[in-house]
Length: 227
Picture 1 (cartoon, helix red, strand yellow):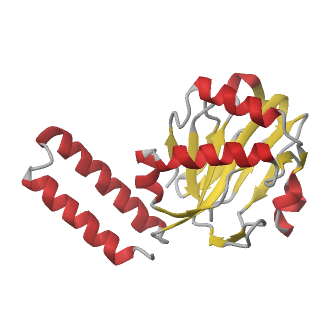
Picture 2 (cartoon, rainbow, N blue to C red):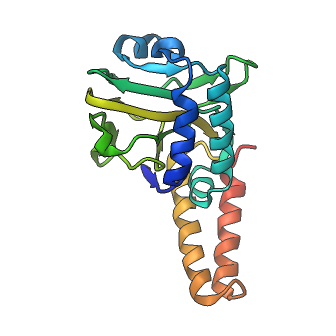
Picture 3 (cartoon, rainbow, N blue to C red):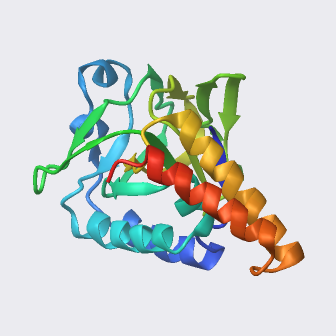
């Protein structure tokens, strides 16, 4: 499932985040690359140990925990601390697939990468190119979202970032391990949750259909979740 999550941050919040990030010590982006990715990757990245990355990363983590669409779609178990990259001057990231296991440098915690996310921190009009191109079951999808919006997609997907030929594309990217490993099961739960919420709006939480749908949701989650 490829999901657009709008307005994780407001425009004013994005400007505040960018002010912090832009003051950081940007370095070569291959610091977090695996062997395959290093051959295709040309960008700049903010070191994950920098005060700017840690400050903004903590803000993003808090926003994700409070975002109902993200929680429902991702069912997060562990979120890798958000990282930050910048593309400009023709920089790009060729076709690759994300590493299956990510290890956090500071404490050695390892996660299975079930889902990948990109949070856009530049407006689409601020740069040319820079589309995130994701190979999905229904064909290649081109993603270039407003600042403050995020895209969530399976980490097993082939994807790339097209060259940025004008301006700069700044974003946060991260991976997460879900409580539900299987993409199809996770998508089914998300669809069921969305449908249940719609019935809840129409009928109210005491309606028998809402109670039964909620029971089905939790019984499926109980069957598929890995805690």
